[in-house]
Length: 294
Image: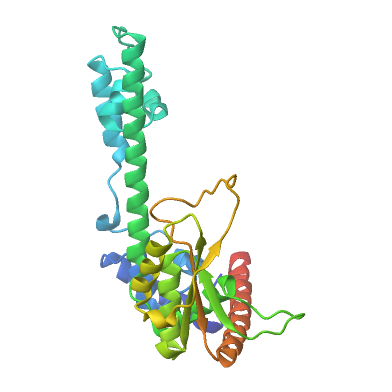
């Protein structure tokens, strides 16, 4: 299909530019940003048939692992020993070396169990390393945020976690409660973006009575940078001795409530902006569905 209207009317011309950029060695993200293509389906078609630059390709670690596993198997190692050595799963090792002769078993049951445990620990460590690498890559891809991006993010954040006026109780107040320090930091950055000064902010810690209350109060005070006068009395949640709390440990600091004084006007702005986001998302959804069908 060739677009005849809209942003991608000159599709062939846009494809020529995309191909040229790809052959210069740009990644998909760089091509997308350079041409301002915000639709992944369109981007795929623009780059169809063009191989990725070598610098964007990751080495196939499985090929190296397979060769190393076969080499270790030929030395007489068992699946457990290979797992300890390489940190890969036994299922992968089985696929790689099943055509090779099976070594003679010379260990006791206890020795085999100990090796198996070490192999599983190596696998868990490898998986954790992969998870952390994926998270770091995703974090790096976000990069710097524009004021518009922060504004839209803050509106969505508030509408998900903030207090809202109800048909049966009209209450136009801006109150945001969360236990995630990152959520609090983003919301405070958003408040400063929309012009709320520190004098109009009040904070309130909510926490279980059996937790480290003083430590939690210090933590939230340091994170917000607010004066002690901005904090109201801490609210303690009481429970019976039989209560089995899951949220325990050094990282549990309860929740922090952030309230904006005289926030009715801001609340209306949040609500109106949220409805605008919904309409914008609906328009984008219809556009993307149309492209998929064409």
